[in-house]
Length: 298
Image (tube, rainbow, N blue to C red; front, side, top):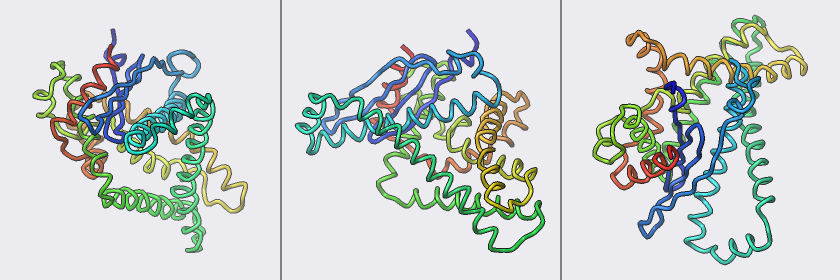
């Protein structure tokens, strides 16, 4: 079986880790009692089920929206578990008895839409608005300034998140996720002792992908010139799926470059950024990540 079929990805959630393999999604959460609970369900990506969607650029757009939906669903599950422990056991049970599953799925869908909308507003419309205040007429200079502002907002956003004390636990689980995946890719047994020696940084991390999106957007928008009216702005937004698709292909390509020196140069910016979004996990957190990974590989 080709190595690509064994590729797994993940995400840190509240007191846990979500892992996604080609056939399963697994979420492992540590309860306050110390027990690790695991939720597992089958899931095969649309790009594997529909051949047309598995072509370059298009598959990147599909995977992006799938990742958003699955990630929010995993966060919702972990949040529900945390709330249930504290105060909402009876409320949640009552909701289940009333058949609220359809409502929850609709709510998750709306959360994805709202999240995407806020992302477009913060990282694409705001830089465009701020750049227009400079009165720049040239298309090249306009897009260069627009891209610089966008990158600055993105980096500032990441930095502000790191100041949030409650996020440190999430970053530690993020590091545990990467360490367990490194262990799998090295062909070693999935145990804490093996995982501890690996770094918290990983080339295929979503943080690296977002950084690539920021860079690719500058290059793509260079071809569109300076937007002069509402139609031009809407045209720019319509290119965002293309930007995501190109970024996805570049990330995949960077992990397959055989020249080690060139590969290091390509992935270095993303790894640098991950130094802010990952922290060294403890053994208990590694156990949770490994539990999620093992179940996803079953």
